[in-house]
Length: 583
Image (cartoon, rainbow, N blue to C red; front, side, top):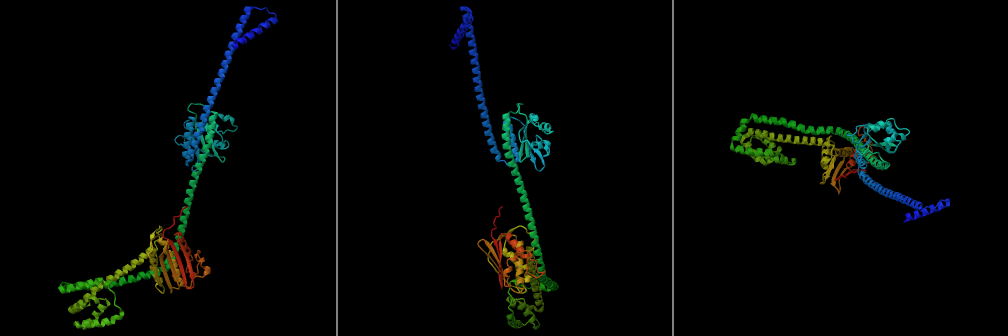
């Protein structure tokens, strides 16, 4: 309707305009003009509507496209946020690179992207995926030096946009078949480079995709730098722990050498005493061996007579009982010397009553008393009364065999005791801690120091039952040796030393007390200092108590001294359970 009205108005305007020009009215012509105007108006209206509709559709399409892009953008940032959170759990730079690689390929549909990171060990940039690239780039490579000043996403096609592109621009892009390069820069230094190949659809990267790469670049920088820092921190920590262990080992070796030096000095003082302790039983063995040889020779030379005695029924029974007594001689108690004279007199009378030759009376009585055969005196008297001197000599030699075997046995036991104590004391390779009895260690030390103690020292001990403690017995032996030697020196070798060992609630306490002149109050704190000594030159290095304190502290224990004129007491407390030391 609007179009018709508009056509009528336009025709009317044309009619009056013609009249104004003096054109004569023609009805048919006017109707024709009206039809033409009406047709043109319809065409114009159609075109206007068509343009409006196209514009509206374009707006709708634009809105839809904007919504899609917004949705994709939201999805991307959501994925990026999840990706960033997942990277926070990664502490390995290579694993971070693989995760970034997968994310880029997923977002941009681009295969075979690769990341070059700085390899500290080699001093070059290497690809995280060696199977797709074995290239190596030095930090002084012109392209990598140029990247340090261009912290942005770089496209292969934008070379002309830069005033100073590096000379190996094309070579780098070509060698890695890359369209996009993303430098990863921290503190003006390149720590990595991402090379991204062309997309699978061969389309170029859009401006929006470049912006996404910038977002990925930020996340990558944060995650990769954290992973590299963590890896370096772990490496430094391991190196530090290694250095600490090496220094600790060196200190322990130094302390062990000091302990060994002090121990050897102590052993040097004790060598003469130990030699004497071993020579005494050795002499017993030598003498007993000589007498035993004579006894056996006598038995062999009088074997016929011995067989004759054995074959007689009464003599055999008597001989069996006598030999049985000879064997258990070690368990009989000796006769008090004050009673010997009286017993000898009564025994002589008893022997004479049996009609034994006077020449044998003293010999037989001495044999019975000296060898303590009073329990079988009647049996021996009756056998000698029957067999005379021959049977007495046979009995004396049989007794001598068993007697000297006992002497040898005890002498060997004594040597074994000394050697075992010496081995326990000087066991140089006993570096490991073990469950040990403190009293046993002290006793072995006293055995080694026996020669120093038995000439004028009155030693008393009071031991209570104590639990085993975890310790280094070898090192503690040096502690006991040093303190006891100091006590001997303080008393001039003619005093009293008392050792107490008793359990406490959490500790084992060891007290070594002497009745020497005491340590002056003004130097009591100095005695723990290395090389401090009150001894004359050549009598001590002064290392002793310093080492002693170090050993006790190494065992998580405590050592103290309480001294006054006439008494000095060293107290050592060792924990029953050592505390666990944590870093």
